[in-house]
Every structure is written in structure tokens, then in C-alpha cells.
Amino acid sequence: MKFVAFHLMPYRELPADFEETYPSVWVTPPKKLYDPKKGHRMYHDYLDELEFAVDLGFDAVGVNEHHSNAYGLMPSPNLMGAILSRKVRHSDQTSLIVLGNSLASYNPPIRVAEEMAMLDVLSGGKFIAGFPVGTSMDQNYAYGINPAELRERYYEAHDLITKTWKTDEILTYNGKYNQFRYINPWPRPAQRPHPPVWIPGGGSVETYDFSITHNYSFSYLSYFGHKYAKKVMDPFWERNDELGADRNPYKAGYCQMICLSETDERAQIDYEEHVRYFFNKCLHVDRRVAEAPGYRTVKSLRAGLTSQFDGTQKSASRMLKDGMGWQDLIDHGFIVAGSPATVRDIMRESLQDMRVGNVVCLFHIGSMPHWLVQKNMQLFAEEVKPYLSDIYSEWDHSAYWPKGYAQEQEVEMTE
Image (tube, rainbow, N blue to C red; front, side, top):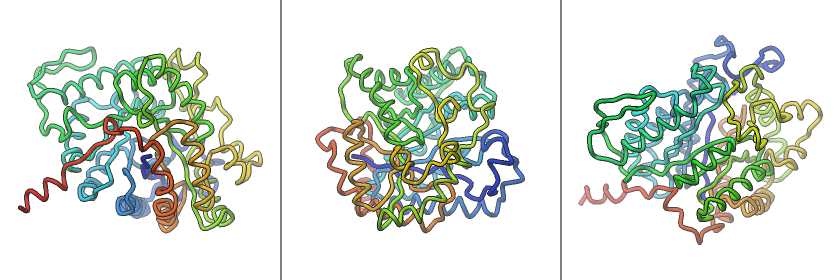
């Protein structure tokens, strides 16, 4: 098993009445609510937490990209990745994942090829590239991309970036949305032909096929936890079998919120208010900006696959308002919470049931303070991870995870 310490970097001091007073955490939250001095502290707390995860020996630290929102304060995850790469390069265990750059919003897309190559070199060949389509709020509403063009732009950008990485020759490119006489980015990636690629998604049918045919790792990123993730991963494996691909579990992953404390009872005391902050405020999205017409494909609509933001599924925040309690959150699988023994048992069963080799772990949730995040991560690293790492150890993960070369290179330089 591989475990990623992932961070959304939310604004953790929204007003108590935010969800009652303002229509959405995304696209329209008033800028007056953002205090740069508080933001300064939050950014450094969050980076300290990810660097602490490197010290604890997590398999990777991860960041992502969102715009015009208080749910995730990383409009440029590559900036965060550049900072973290300085720490990752000295680690024997930890890689860096930018999960990722929303390809259709980069003009020109070769900027992604350039910046991710920089991160790969900076980290010492320990970089994983994430290529999300991006949420409708980010791409269609905040950045103004026509939803009817979004996926076409995404596929063209992907092909351009990977073609750039795979060749050492100067290229000419004449596509529908991108035309270049000279493509010759420096630096080139440290890993050849390019870093491993992960495709984060909400479970669209096209994303299944895209990940499987390119031998990329598909990660289902939702905040409904392992029970809902199984509903998405089962069709993924069915489609994988239809296409005749191998069943390597490292080609699949999912996101899970985790809350660890000394006892089950203590976990509720430590975390409940912060979990409620996340569901009530960080996922408070106005339906008018949740999903533009044309964003979701016809195949996905027919398959009944939904987004965690689109309003078609009864939201966790509404369920909380309707009386959902702490144990209900656990029973529904939204969170895995309790003592190390409790968390180990729940995760071992769910990981084997879903056949996923990668877990994108959320240890910071909502308004959690810095000390509690560190406690959460340390308990997991010391008392849960060692008991789960043997799952799928018989499978080769090298196609989906980097090897790195920085330590070897530094030894050679000293000699």
C-alpha cells in the first residue's frame, strides 16, 4: 500500500454563519472575508504539516489546484510543489504529487510541461504529475472556459505535453487550440520518458478509459469516503477487465478523511467540530455554479455518475443539518475515525474490498488547528501505516510511482 499525505489548504476561519449568509464557498465568496495575515499563518502551517509528513515517512505529499474559493487556497500548486521539493529530495521514502494542473486552463499548455519538468528535477526524480480535467466551478465559471470545449482542450493539452516530454527534438505543433512553430522546453524531466501520471477524477466513463488505455493511475477524489468510492471503483475494474488490462491495484486510488486519536471517544471530541466545518462550509457550493451545462459527458450522465459538488446527491452538509451524528458519518464511510486499532480494521477491509493500492489521505479537515493535524498524521504513520503497508506488496508499483535519483547523485558528488 501507498499512502499520500494530501492537503487542500482551506481557509479555516470562515464566519460561523457563513453557509447561512453567503451563497457559495466557490466562485462568489466575498474577498473581504480573506485576511492576508491569517492566510500567511495558514500557508506556513500547511507547509509545515506537509514537511512533517515527509519526516514521518509517508509515501508522498500532495497538493492540488483550485480557483476563486475558500475551500482550497492553492491557485498554483506548482508554487507549493517547488517549496516541498527541497524537502522531498532528501527523503528516501517520500515523493511529491501535484494532483494536479488542470490542463485546459493553461495557455500555452507547454507551461505545464516546463514547470512539472522543473519539479521533477528539483525533487530528484521523485515527482508524480496529476492531470485533472478540473471542477466546473474552476474551469467554466472562475476561468471562463466553454464547457463544450473543456474536454477537447484537455485532451489536446495532454497530447502536447506528453509529446513534448517524450522527445528530445524540437517540435512543431498545429492543433485546434494550440499552434507552435518551436517547442523546445528546458529543462526536460529527470524521469524518462516522463514522470508517472495520475488522473484524479469524479468517475466519468471517459476518465476510466483514458486512464486505463494510457496506463495511468486513476484516483477517485470525493469526500463521501470508502463506501461511496466502492460504487465508483467497481465499474472502473469492470471497464479495466473489458479492455484487457492487468489488475494492478496501484493503478487505482481514492481519497479518505481520517481522524485518529487515543480512543474512539476521544476522536469525536478532537475532530467533530472541524469535520462539521468542512461539510457545512467548505462544501457549501451554490448549485448555480456547481456544474455548467455540458460539463458532464453524455456517457457519464447515462451511467448515473455524479460529482460531489453537483447537488444531485443529498449533500453531507444537509444530512448533518437533518440530524446526522458523528457515528453516522463513520457508518456512511464519510470519515474513518477512532483509535489506531479501529482505523486499521476499517481501512484494511475497505482497501482489500476496493482493490486500490493508493490512498490519498486527508489529515487536515476544515478548521483543524496545526497541533491536531500533526497528532493525526503521527498516529497514522506510527500506529496504522505499518500494519497496512503489506497489502498488495506482491504487485509491482514502478509504473505508477517514481524511483528518484537525488540521494545516489549526491553521494557521487561528494566522492
